[in-house]
Image (cartoon, rainbow, N blue to C red; front, side, top):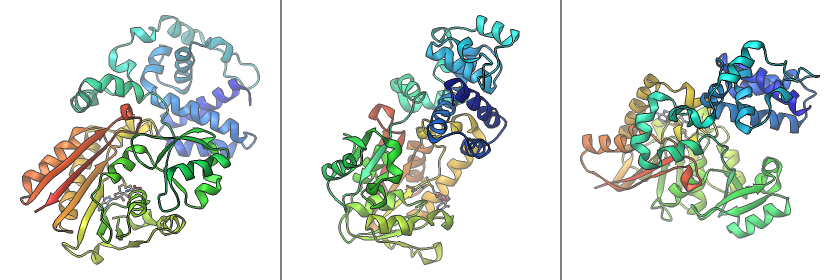
Length: 393
Ligand SMILES: C[S@@+](CC[C@H](N)C(=O)[O-])C[C@H]1O[C@@H](n2cnc3c(N)ncnc32)[C@H](O)[C@@H]1O
């Protein structure tokens, strides 16, 4: 496909997403219907679609038009300083030339420098006060970082080798990486990230895809050999696997939706980890030295990887999530043994889901104290992520 034809495809996919389709679904649907597109085409189209979703507000403003796939790609070209007419030529599979209305809109659209702050930062208006509150003077820098692609980060599995050894194993397969300073086993991929999923290093359990902040948060947990540990919201088991790689212990995974843990046995086998799966009825009160709750959240820390969430989150959904997080906090706390710990984690930047949630738990639950908490952001070269450790008397 020519570069212009790829932009034409991105326009079609973006229109489906703006019409309500999930991004992954729209991309897969397009690929199935257009089998001539090779893997390079699909990867390039995917990047264009996700870039446009991250910068949805500013790209539309730069086009001067109403929101549409074409407006997004006109804005994207303008943001890159590329002449729009060269791509919107109508030649072959290139997008049709600009209509008179589109051309007039583009001619009168402001420059990026002239956009209002929240438009230029691609920040939804209603979330700006909460984000400013959580990020303080880093607000603009973090929101600017959220407009760009996230790096690919791996966790080198300590049960399979040192970070240096695993880095060499990756290099032998042509995957380049450098140690990430935030976590002891984190590797930032600097070349050939597309090879990871089909690599021997991945299938042999040497690496898992995991951002640096959750790795750092797991490293900060007070894990000791032989501990009884419950991952209460285990999902795919990313945190269980990271904990089990650190220390021998008795690891139990649980999730309200057990089907989410379906891949965990295979992943654990691959990683050489032992993780027992239990349902709610099999979890005794006060039976664990450490309970981890990686709760469902807005995902505001992962907007670089899942940019749709930035635009679809609303106040009602956020309030619903905050209520659910509080209920999980209360339920999970009952499984902690006296003197044990409760680790609360989100991939959110918002105070309501982080510090305020922890403060509310402490206020309504006697016998607990806060040990540490930390908010990570793209300024740490990671996703936005929050971790708090609480201890039971
Ligand atoms: C952020 S995801 C967990 C991701 C996972 N820890 C990982 O590292 O891959 C949150 C999980 O919480 C689960 N969940 C939702 N409500 C729950 C509840 N009331 N009790 C336990 N788990 C719940 C969801 O099914 C989802 O899998």
